[in-house]
Amino acid sequence: MQSCDSLSSQIETLLEVSRLSSGPPSVERKEVDLALLTREIVAPLAEPASEAGCLIEVRADHPVIGDWDLVRVRQIVTNLITNAAAHACCAPIEVSVEEFGDGAVLTVRDGGPGIAPADQARIFDRFVQLAPERLHHRGFGLGLWIVRQNAAALGGKVTVDSAPGAGATFRVELPRL
Ligand SMILES: Nc1ncnc2c1ncn2[C@@H]1O[C@H](COP(=O)(O)OP(=O)(O)O)[C@@H](O)[C@H]1O
Ligand SMILES: [Mg+2]
Image (cartoon, rainbow, N blue to C red; front, top):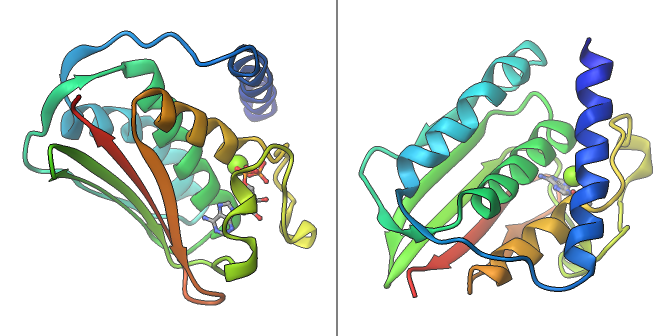
């Protein structure tokens, strides 16, 4: 059953890459509470992650209201959490959503192996995978490219703050526009 879920999520990734490759995705903005939406997206991921030894803590207690696209936000959050669980397994994962400037900032922080400064820009490119010895998960090196395309489609950006051995914090700024 788990391998069916994993196969269907891989197919979903490839379909999404094929859609995003043909140009910026359509964006359907709708008023949402980004904090609540993030909690809803994380909830079904928390149980399988905790079975694999990763605790996910969400700090998104205050409403952050704005017009965002549910599908784009879901892809951003899901890919960042999947990465934290796959590449930084067994260290707790912290997700937060806060007001930032005239918009919001969403962060996913892990206490895993981190990413060397020289690699921090290129991990957002298509098909880039580092540390193949850690790649027991079946990724394609596409998740962060999908995150970057989705953040850009919403007028925002994704950055990473990390050092080898000191975990990684992915930060997504999402303006209200
Ligand atoms: N949270 C993380 N901690 C350490 N390395 C990471 C993390 N997230 C991504 N990476 C690195 O960035 C690479 C690209 O990530 P991604 O595009 O999602 O591809 P994939 O997860 O399929 O390998 C990964 O192969 C991994 O080396
Ligand atoms: Mg990935």
